[in-house]
Amino acid sequence: MSFKDFSSSFSLIEVCFLSMEGLEDEEQFQYKQPVNIVTVQGNWVPNVNAGGKLETTEFYATNPQFQFDVPENENEDHELVVISLLLCDFRKRNPPKIRQIGFRIYSLTQQHNSPLSATELTSLPTVYNTECQSKATVTVLLQLIQGSYLIIPSTEEPNQRGDFKIRLVSQFKASLWELDRPNKQLEITAEQEMMTPSVVQSEQNIRTCVKIFDRHCDKESYTIDAVQLRKLFKDNHPKGISGFDGFDLETCRQMINTFSTENEPYLSMKEFLELSSYIHTLSTEFLQHCPPHKGQIPMIHLRKAFESAGYSTSNKVFTTLVQRHHCSKTDTVNFREFTTCALSMKYIYQNAIKQPNLISGCSPDLLEDYIVGFLRM
Image (cartoon, rainbow, N blue to C red):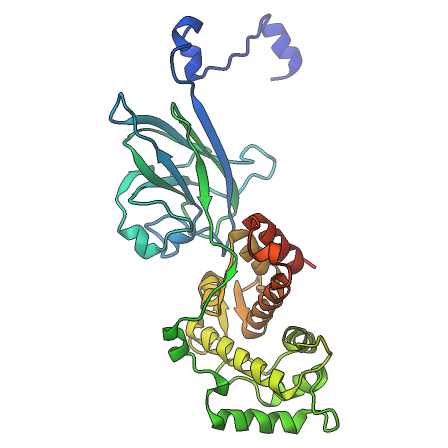
C-alpha cells in the first residue's frame, strides 16, 4: 500500500507494545515479578556448525548449543518459559536459502562448559522438539521444573548458512549462553601415542632421517633452508596419501619459521628431526580421517582430525581456518592445507606462550581475537 492510499484510508494510527506487563494495571503489577527477556544471536556456518536436524544427519551435534537454568520456585513447582527461534534477514532482498527451522530442548543433569558430543546427547532426555517448520519464527510455551536445559537450533538440511536469534521470556532472571569449545593445545594421550608412533622413537628411524638430511643439507653449515626442504619432501614425502607429492615453497618456509628455535631461515639437524616427527604425526592423523584412496578430508571431519592433531578450536577460529584453507568446490582439505593449518596453530601458540596474559588470566575472547587476527594476516 502506498502512503497516499494509506492516508486516504486511515485517519488514526496507534502503535502498541503488548508484553506480559501490559496485561496488568500499575497497582496490580507493582507486586509481581517483572518479565525477563534474554536474546542471543547465533549462526549456522556450512562445514562448521550447520549439522541439520537429528533425523537426517549424523552431524546433528555440531549445531550451535545453548544452555540456560531454571531456578527453584518457592510458590510453584514449575516456571513458565516462552522460547522462540527467529531467522534473521528473512525479509531482506536476498534472504537466507533456508526452508525450515526448528529446535530441540534437552534436560541436563549438570552444567557444561563445552558442546556435548553425539554420544552424550543420545543419553539425555528430550523435553520438547518443535520439528522443523517453514516459518521465520518458531515459538513454544513450556512449563519447566528447576534444572539446567540445552537448546539446539537446527535447519532441516545440513550445511545451510544463516543467522538466527533465540529469545527466552520468563518471570525469573534468566541467562542464556552458547557452549563453545575452548581454544587450546591438547595433550596427547597415552593411547594416541601408541597409535601414532613417533619417527624419532627408534634408532633406525633416526638413522634414516639423518641420511635424508645429509643428502639435502648445506654441507658447510650443516643446515637446510626452504628450497632444500622442498626438494627433500618431494623425494621423501609421507607415503599412503593419494595425490600428495610434497610441499610447496611457502609451506616449507612456514615449517622453518615454526621449528627454528633461533628464528633463522634454516633448520639444524635436531630441528629437522623434530619437524619430521611432527609431519609423521600429522600424516597419521590425516589418514585416519581420510576416506581410502581419496587424499582429502571432507570438511565435516576436519574438526575431529584437527583435535586428534592436538588443537581445540572455537567456532570463530575454526570458521576462519575453513574459509582460508578448504577447497570450496569439493568441500575438502588436502594434506598440504591440513599441515598448513596445524603449523599456523603451532606457531600461534608458541608466540602466545611468550605473552603470559594471552594464556593465563585473560578472557577467552582475547585469545580468540589474537588467533583470528593472526590467521587473517
